[in-house]
Length: 279
Image (cartoon, rainbow, N blue to C red):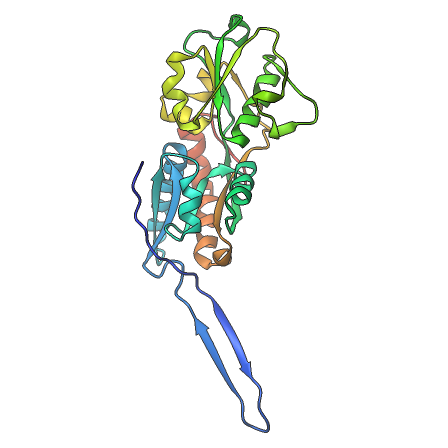
């Protein structure tokens, strides 16, 4: 597992306490905690690939504007630890996940985190080393999909859109492989860790892969996916912080840079339509 450095960072809070007295006798005190970037660094947890590249571009813009702090990307190799590290105060923000996944993580692990801004949409795609169209998949084909609850339901919705199966009505994104209602071609659906699917594609006939992991594996989603989510996918990625820090000025500055024309242009030039700015 990737090691990451634990750094205790506190939010700037100002609490005015008024002490009431009689006549002219009055006093007030102000308690002031350290800023979120009191050490001069805003650390943002990301997964490797596009999220890392985008935060690095934001960091470059921060240097150009000579802010009072620098921005550093802390790379994680899975989808769980960036939220755990954020909740425990080891990083200041994270930028890697969709809202459905974020909400599920908060509830299942009782994390006091909040959404502070939107970033980009990564359309999930179906990839194969053997066929160029989903219609070419043979009966009994082995098809991989993410094992975590949110991405599993998303992949099943993608498979249904591609005509590979039908899911029980009303289940929505909570669907699991147990909710497959029709599978006429007897496909074998295999749940795997999201970060590992691209590396195991040679053992499968096809698989649903998150765009960041697909790009990391060398695919160009807009060109290499044999089926991909439509442009209006609801799975917008977000920036998260601890609830206590959500009003920190450094977060506003980070988001302002992220939502700049420079970053939008970087997305268009670097990712050729595989990522969609969503702010």
